[in-house]
Length: 368
Length: 49
Image 1 (cartoon, rainbow over the protein chains, first blue to last red):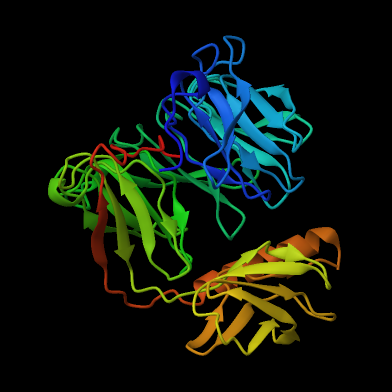
Image 2: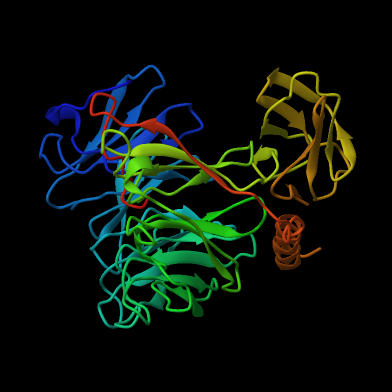
């Protein structure tokens, strides 16, 4: 256990953490701080916590963590405002959002802009999907409506460049949706939860979607399913849908946190309730997907260093960028660095380990 | 290659990588790894985030 919050340094840390390039973790608390209206903090791996901002009545409330953008600064949402925390720790209120209710965490898309959702505001006050430039110019790209309101709407960018998300409620059956939005705001509902075509379908998704290494999207609903405690589902970019797992009280129930995929191929997540103590569980879900290499970053120029996460790296004999051999340094069994070779072209990065070849789950993009 | 065509290529290439393994038949196994007990935390929720 790294840190126990006391009211003065934050309380009720609902949000997840963002790992910064400085090695510290960044997050928010919903309560606590000098005004008892929440904080933004950073915490070192040794548990040392620094409060970066005590939110005030002017700021509003947040349940979303800040993200670190490509410029190295941190961007987040609180109330009806987007804020920026410079790497120096300086806090700046950046822009007004189109709504003040339940602003989602921001995501930086491949176009360099920041995107998010609100649960209110917009044309019918049912929420929005908005775009914000790093200097704070906000544009609404989609307005949620009465049929698909933006309550607890999540957003992530798929490898096809489109945005994918869930809404907690709404849709044909009023139990939530999975939607897809082009960067210009053309929205398609991919799935309406509690779909009668899928007996014991899930309901009320809270967690964000995960795009796994097979290209499909995975998510969880907090309710529904054959036991009534939520499901894990799979959905394709065209709406092909499957129920994969029904949560149950003895082994975890009501998942609301976004799952993630480890480089070992398995999916990991948290369930809010259930388990042997009825206080929730951490779970894994093995789809049988093979291990892969994760690149940090996924874009760069020849001569730049790329960090690669995986497993079984000890004894690695080769790293290649779309077939071009690269120099590399094995730091640990799960971490190595490689230099983008001169003349490399964009494509898959492969790591030849004693246990086999690990391919990257994303194509590395060599900048011109 | 122009900037716009570069990004178009990027998106196409990324999709190609992820779709390459589609269609595989998977076994699925759920495992509860850790049961929260109130001492090491309880009711984990990220409010969807």
